[in-house]
Image 1 (cartoon, helix red, strand yellow):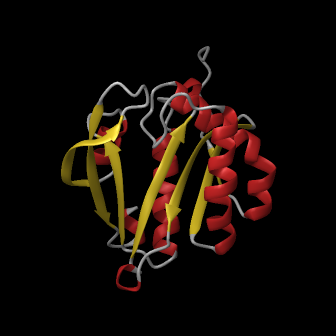
Image 2 (cartoon, one colour):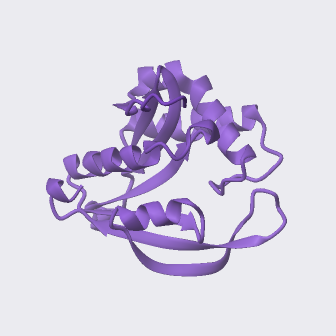
Image 3 (cartoon, helix red, strand yellow):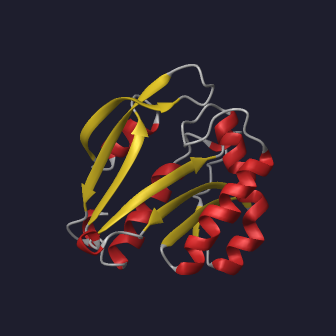
Length: 186
């Protein structure tokens, strides 16, 4: 960026209609993120159609059922990031939500987009009566220090938890949590 300050991302919650309109852009951001080596559940080879199928068949139905919140970040009119909150919990866990698929397009990282998305998804959790949010991340990934800076605590690490995107090793995963004591803690 040439001397000009980067505009804050605009964070929007997508409903089913907005989701359909953004399906291709969502597929592109996931595909680019996996191609860049992110450990977000997929391994190579991972095609754009694989990415589109994840959104269409996995996220879309949950969004329509109301068991998933989907936020996007736009910067300069382009989709630059996304995050989800899974609300589909057992009755004894109705106070909890799971943060999933924090994705920032590789060309737009290190600009505060992930932080803005996380703050917004925590607000969505709180607005839905969720006082605890959990997530997991590949141990040592760039996202781990971000989560810690946002107040997440490590619950533990599981070695050899997930196959790396390049299929060359098993990586450890760290489970993290944050208690949302009030809207002010977000």
